[in-house]
Image 1 (cartoon, one colour):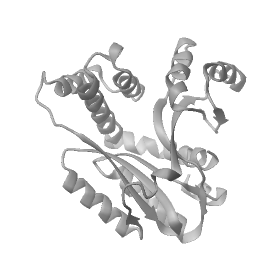
Image 2 (cartoon, one colour; image 1 turned 45 degrees about the horizontal axis):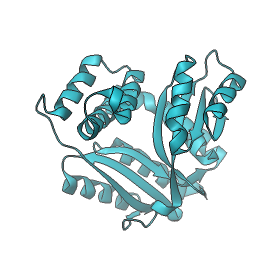
Image 3 (spheres, rainbow, N blue to C red; image 1 turned 60 degrees about the horizontal axis):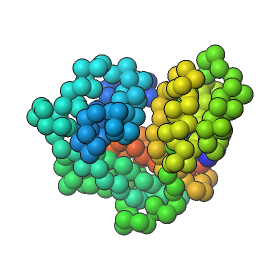
Image 4 (cartoon, helix red, strand yellow; image 1 turned 180 degrees about the horizontal axis):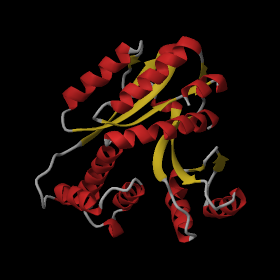
Length: 248
């Protein structure tokens, strides 16, 4: 978990640039569209859509954008059909990658992802080649404002959370899949501001990387996250503190 949290801190700082480019909005709209298409356009009966809407509101997406995405998914407006896929691969140093995409053109997307792995000295793997190294967890981020760690700890542990980590300017809560929604609900009921909440693939064991390998891996992560069709990128890389300071 430590490697995940340290890299989360860096990604969070880089997120401001993503927001300016509109990347966060694009990801949120795709998630809303897929959730509404699969489970219907009523968030009260569709937990995935409810979560997607909450995350969209957290990044200040206008209500009109959210409503339009739902209508496109349910057929009220003409829209694109997105397919969800997960690609697996390896980066320098034997680091494992899972890449989640939402695309309207599978051939285009797999070609782009393969090209990026190759560009940064990695390679795509067969389905199942690295997935066993990860497990699905709920991750909830709270901004550090007027709440103490003790206040949060009591609420989330009672609701079933597994872990709470304190970073420089945010708290990160980890849950199992079953406890994710109860923990999220408990935080909302206690008037906590949730910055982001999602189910993510977390490495069971991390692999320490440094030097040139670490530089290539960060470039690969950033290139994949910049790709239009990529929704999420996960790896089991754990970076040295000194290297992370250079990235901050």
